[in-house]
Length: 240
Ligand code: OAD
Image (cartoon, rainbow, N blue to C red; front, side, top):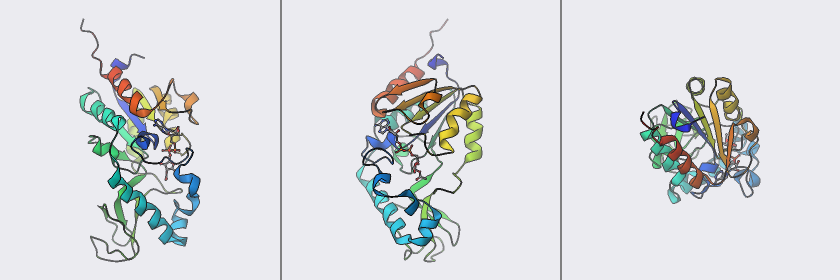
């Protein structure tokens, strides 16, 4: 496929796109799930059993966002969204806000957002950069005890699945960047996009669980390869 003819594009990102900003991935050596069992942190049952542990884990990660910034991969994706003539739909499994800080104005956070609090008492979600726990009053209803991290945990339905499926069905090019292809439904997007006829490219430092499903597998750092890929897509076709 000539990338300069790509029409509608869907980009899926995972923790690898933020690794060069200094955020840990989940499954690489030294990753978050090496020191924590996700079943004791990232499930509704874990939150019911030991909310203090869950609040501490996400508070630390929320505060860490104050120490990091977007990297060239986030900025290259934002450039593609601004300059490409077709639709560029960005869906991320990441709960950081580095795509936004890299300049993306449309980001679909299918696994939620660290800088968002969700009050189970009044149902509202609001932006916050602060640590919070069961003693924190909700900014909307002032009730205490109802706040939870606005994160989609294992066993919960990711956000915006209808929209994502529509975008996958309509895309000509699907690109996955820095994701291990282990967590569904995101890991299944490449097969879905292919079934609808899209050309598929993976960018990853290593092989992922789904590398063999992609038409093209580009091995290397997102901070280096994504900019090159975006250049290839944005090259203007010769005028005839
Ligand atoms: P993983 O930690 O599973 O995978 C990160 C991927 O990024 C790996 O395949 C690495 O090879 C790759 N990688 C690391 N550094 C890179 C770099 N600089 N450039 C390119 N690739 C790099 O993270 P995810 O696939 O995002 O869900 O994990 C998916 C979900 O699992 C997360 O959203 C989270 C987790 O459990 C929940 O918490 C619900």
